[in-house]
Image (cartoon, rainbow, N blue to C red; front, side, top):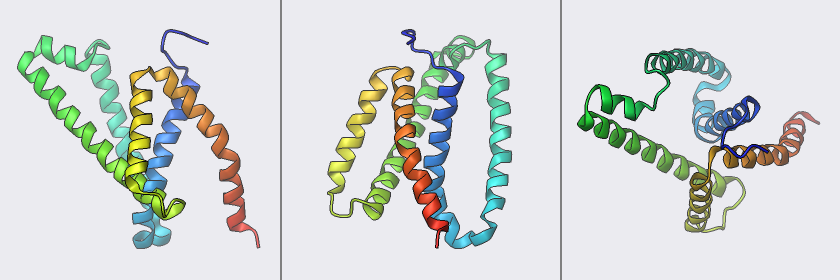
Length: 166
C-alpha cells in the first residue's frame, strides 16, 4: 500500500461515483421524481452539460495557474487580502454544503430505516466519523469508500432486482 497519501484513478472514480450517487439518491431524486415523473432524464442531460462546462473551466484554471494551490496563486498574484477573502468565502460555501448534506442525510435515514433513533445521535456519530476521516488523508477516505462500496453493492443489486420481480 502506498504511504504517500495519493490515490489511484480507480479509487478517485469510486469516490466520484459515491458522491454522485449519494447526491442523486438522497438529495435530488426524492424531490425531482414526484414533479418530473418519467421526464426526469431530461434533468440528467442538462446537469451533465453543466458539469462538463464546469469541468472544462476547472481544467483551464488548473492549467493556467501552473497546477499550484489556488489560494497560494491568488495570494501571490492578486494579494493577501483577496486570497484570505476567497478562502473565507469557499469555507462558508463548503460549511453550508456540509450542513445541508447532513440535514438531508439525517432526514433520509429517519424516513428510510431508523425512524426511532434520535437525530442528535445520528448527527454526532456521522460528524465524528467525517472529522476522523478528514483528519487523516485522502487515501484513508478512498479505502473506506471502497470497503463501503463492496459491502453495499450486493444489497443494492438485491433491492434493484426485487423491484422488478413478481
